[in-house]
Length: 216
Image (cartoon, rainbow, N blue to C red):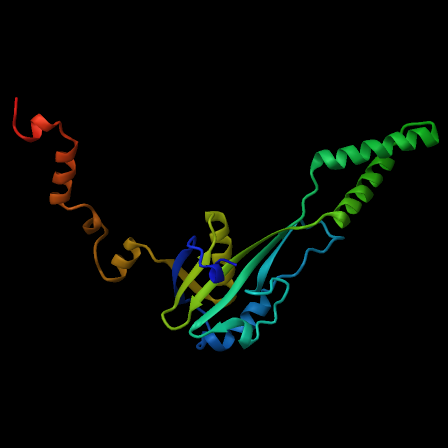
C-alpha cells in the first residue's frame, strides 16, 4: 500500500474534464469506480487476466463508500490486476502422464481426439488449482487541485491505470512534467533548454586546465 507507506515511486497528472464528464466529479466518483470495479477471473472461462478498481485498504472490496474512499480533499483507491497463466511445460507434463496411464490401461495410444479432450480437462484442472498473481497500484486524487498520482513503477502499468481512469471518469490525464507546465503558461519549449551561460560553464568544465587558462 504505497500511499499509506509513503513510497516515492509514482507518476503525477493533472485531471482535466473531457467530453461527457459529469459536472460534479466528486459526487459521481463512487458510481464510476463501481462501474469498473474489479471482478475475479472466471475459472471456467478462457480469460487469463482481470483488472479493475478496488478499495485502497481492502483489495477484495469495491463498495467505495465515503469512509473508505475520501480522506480530506483526497480520493484514494487502487487498481487491481489478477493473472492466471498455466505454463506450457506444466500442461505438457500432465498430458504426458495421462497418455502413459491411458496406454497402460487400454493397451493403445490415445487418439488425437481423445488427447485433445483430455488436454482441455487437464487445463481446467490446473486453472482451478492455480493461485492468481495479484498486483495492486494505488491512486491518490486531490479533488481540490485536480492532481492525481498513480503509484506504479513501470510505464506499462501506469498507462493501464491511466486508461482505466480516463474511461471511467471521462477525463483526460496530462503528465505534470516541466514541458507540460511551461506549455500551460505559454512558454515555448525551446526556452526550457540550457542558457548560454550554463552551456559555457559546462564546456569550460570539460576543457583541459591549460586551455581554460589560455596556456599553450
